[in-house]
Length: 332
Image 1 (cartoon, rainbow, N blue to C red):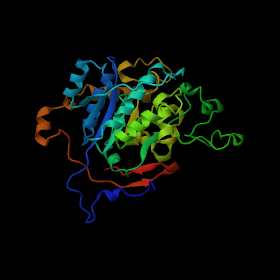
Image 2: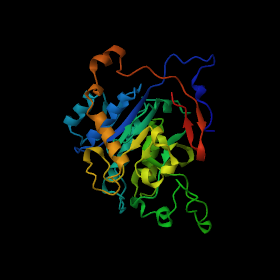
Image 3: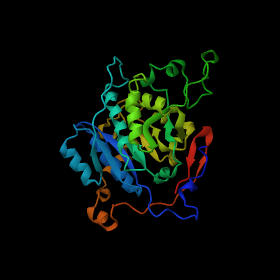
Image 4: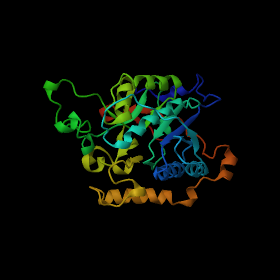
């Protein structure tokens, strides 16, 4: 099913349709803190890799105008969204701020786009990933997570020493039935916006239990039947560097996710566990190199020339199946 080529986007005579579907990257921002630096860095990173598509920012009402103006100056389409209020609960989230992340599901309301790629603000893109927009419709694409860090200590997987990134290292006990379903990290995903889907998500908040990993746990339950894994290259959480380095080729990773404790480049001190590693230092330096590169700032005069400020759309690329059932998109 997921191995079908994307040539269905072509018309019967092999030509592209006259009106191409609207596509875009999207991220989420809340509050007046320093995460705005992450969004600026992401916008500049997408320009560096010559993405053809804009970056939309779903901003909660508490994002100050100063930050919104900064993002607009970087070419972002800033859209205010309402926060999502949870039903009454007593859940202790893995991180207290995770409760805010439910509101990022508002991106499903952006149905003026036919397909979007969500990227957390603590992500940086080091290679063009526009070909993800050519993945077959009807699926939810994301990268499988790792259960080895202490933040997962509440979970059965962590307590058993089981991780879906290396299921043969510690096998799932036979007396516990089948292993858990494949579980994705929600910091990056490919989706088709739909107000109907958004309404279904909001309705499901009253039936799907609220759990420590907040919207990530919730979305894994909601999208379980249509979830298709992507290779680690499209969302490498930094903990993979010391937990499962055998599972990827560092030089081929396109998207790094600075979600490990202490790894946010704009807060980096090198004092937290594993943050003194040379590969971490290098990745933090690469992020700052992009952030500080004034040549990557949005230039309105260039936007006026092509109508959007983005390069021409790359050709449609096929996809194939890779190891462990992950879909491997063909890079353009």
